Amino acid sequence: MCALKILNVQQIREADAYTIAHEPIASIQLMERAAAACFYWIRKMAGKEAGFKVLCGMGNNGGDGLAVARMLQNDGFDTEVMVIRHSKNVTDDFQINFNLLADTDGIVITDIYETDPQIELSSRDIVIDAILGSGLNKPVSGFIAQVIHQVNKSNALVISIDMPSGLFADSCSDPRRQAIVQADYTLTFQMPKLALLMAENEPFIGQWEVLDIGLHPEYLQKEACSHFLTERRDCSLIYRPRPLFAHKGNFGHGLLIAGSTGKMGAAVMAAKACLRSGAGLLTAHVPGDGFLIMQSSIHEAMVSIDPADSCFSALPVLDNYNAIAVGPGLGNDPGTQAALKLLIQQTTVPLIIDADALNILANNKTWISFLPPGSILTPHPGEFERLAGATENQFDRLELLKIMAERYKIYIVLKGAFTAVACPDGNVYFNPTGNPGMAKGGSGDALTGVLLGLMASGYTPGQSCILGTWLHGYAGDLAARKFSTESMLTSDLIDMLGKAFRKISR
Image (tube, rainbow, N blue to C red):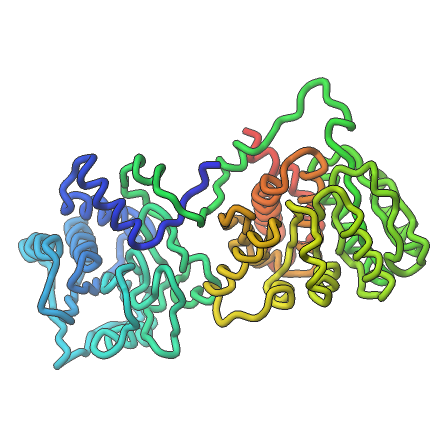
C-alpha cells in the first residue's frame, strides 16, 4: 500500500525544511510555490468579476496570503489586503512578501490593530483567510477572535489557506471556547490534515482541496505515520484480475447469516452485493419464512434454511466456507443471541459482523475476546459507542478505535463520511468515496455483502476492508450522479458495483 499519508503539523514543518535543504529551494520560493497553487485554484473557481479581501496574520500563513494577493492583483482582480497586526514579530518570509506586495500597482493595504479591530466586509466579497493556518497551538481569543467573528457574520464566501484560522489541525477544537473561521473552502497543502476528516469540523472546513506544492518525495516516503487516505491507485494495486482459466471454485464460497421476520430486505441486499463483489458461491442462511423471498430475489444464491421460521436460531455446517458474514436484518431474539455465541466459538475463519449482530455483541462484550483474529466489525458511530463506550469528541473516538483493533487483533470499519478502517497494526485508512445519499437504510447491509464477496474470493481481511469501502463508496457516488443523493436507493448502489470495479481495473 502506498496510500496518501496524513502527517501531523510538526511532520509537515519537517517536510518543508527537508525540501528546502534537499531540493534545494529557498523558503521564500517554496512559499511562492504554495501561493501559486492557491492562486490558480482561486482564479479558476472565482471568475473574472470577483473582488477579494485578503486577511493576513503575521506568520508564514500570512505570507502565503500576501503572495496570493499580489498574484490576484497582477492578474487584474480587485484585491484589498488587511494585515491583522496581532504581534510585533513577523517571519522573514512574511516581510519579504509584504515588501513585494507594497510595490504592486493599485493594491490597497490596511493595517488592523487591536485598538480599532473593525474590518469592512460584505456578502459580495470573497474573503481569503490567511490569518493563522495550521500552526495554531492554543485557542484563539481576544483581538484575533474579534476579527474571526466579523468574518463569520459577514456572509461572505470564505476561502481558508491551509486551515481555517482557529481550528486545530491535529487535535480537538472546542467552538464553545474558541473562535474559528467558518470557511466555504479550505485549500490545504500536499496532504489532508486529520481535522479535515472529522465530521464535527464540517461547519468550519466547507469543501477542502489538497494542493500539491512539491514537498520532497523522499521525505514523504520515509516518514512514518499511522493515518492514511486511500486513493484509487491503492485499490488498483490491491485488485487482482481474474485469470482466463478460472472457475467458480477459485473465488470461494461465502456464508451470509441474515434476516428475520420483517427484515428480509437487509439479507437480500447483502446477498446481492456479495455476488456483485466476486464471490464464486454464496449460501444465505435465513429463517424459514425468508426462504421464498431469498430464492425468488436472487437466483444465483443458494439457501440454507434455519429451523426457526422467524429468526436465526441454529448454525449450518460451517466446514465449507471461506468467509462468513452475520448481522443484516438478524433481529435480537434470545435464540439468535445463543446461535451467534456458538458461531463465534466454532468458526475457523474470520467473521464479518454487522448490524444486529453488533448490537448483540455490545450486550455481551466478553465475546469480543473470542473473535477469530482478522475478523471485521462494521459499526456506525452509535453502534461503536455501544461496543466501546462513549467519547467526548471524534479524536478521542479515533484513539479508542485504534486501541480496540490492536487489542483484539481485528479490523473495525467505522462507517460514515471518510469511513475509517482501523487495523490490528495500529494504522487507520480513511476512505474518501461516498456521499450523503448513502445515509439511508440498506447501505451498511450492502457494505457487508461487498466485504463478504471480497473475502470469499481470496482477499485478506485488510485488503477487503480498504478495497471494499472504496468500491462501496464509489458505487454510491455513481448512483448519486444518476439519481441524486435524495432519490438514490441502496439497490442502485449495488447495481453500480460493476462500474466501480472497472474504475480500479484500468
